Length: 392
Image 1 (spheres, rainbow, N blue to C red):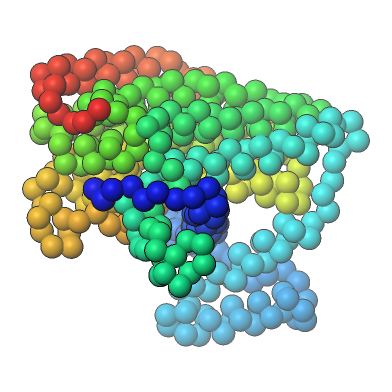
Image 2 (cartoon, one colour; image 1 turned 60 degrees about the vertical axis):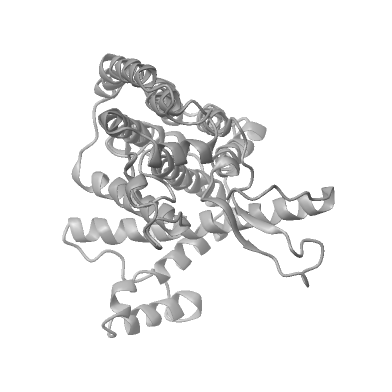
């Protein structure tokens, strides 16, 4: 982690960046389908139902093969738990094979671009997310171009990483609003306006809740902030971090349009909300963007509040830093914390009903924003009381 930086040529830098981007995209597009599958299983257990165990179709072809496979999986003790997993294959095939319909009176150009805008914004955020503070491994010398070079745990370790994340993540709302407006339909427009108002409202307390760790650590760098919060925070700063985490995670539900803040989609009043007129893979882009944004929220929460690759959060890791294996940073701790928070997303969806729209706005403007301003003030007081906390 503290080794001298390796000098790379322009070609080596480009190849390494491409490889890291591919790995991040693969990670995202593996964890998102598994999250969708886990959501069905968890909600099935919560609501005491089996969920989907068959795929609509004939006994021949892909659907027949998947149905027979799911039937055989149900007879094997261990595989029976994964019985619904082939359903994801059917869902993905359905999105690709469905007809891509564009309404006659829609603004075609914007209608087609909007889903991609939401998806791209949600994926690009991971350019500044650090899964591990250093090199994961070193390429063997026999590898062409990049032989002997380290493969880092992040694409780029920028000084303003958090600012980059918040800036890019806020672009996703444009895809929702533009898609709703371009549909030229009343219900999508209402859903898009709700989404715009909701995300803009909750971005304020979300940013302020992240400002408390920034004030405490004195840096916007992803790795430095994670290290300082896990190892250098005094115990009297723990309550501030804990409450900031709770506020941030609450705002994360609103930013990702998840229950109980599911205003833009609200099926019982808006049919399906902003994506009512979308079909095929363009609907799939919106669908994927929502789950990728959930992964983004859990990654930031894991890094800035739960210790990220360091096992113990809230400054407690300094007590186990010299314990073998547990004291060393590990990307598995980072991913495990993300999975725990993703489970919380699913758990809340199955237990808490949707708020009314006025209640959603009231929670942000009347309670969360004043509350987070107080948290930032308290964080500044702690920083003033212990000015030598972390590095800038």
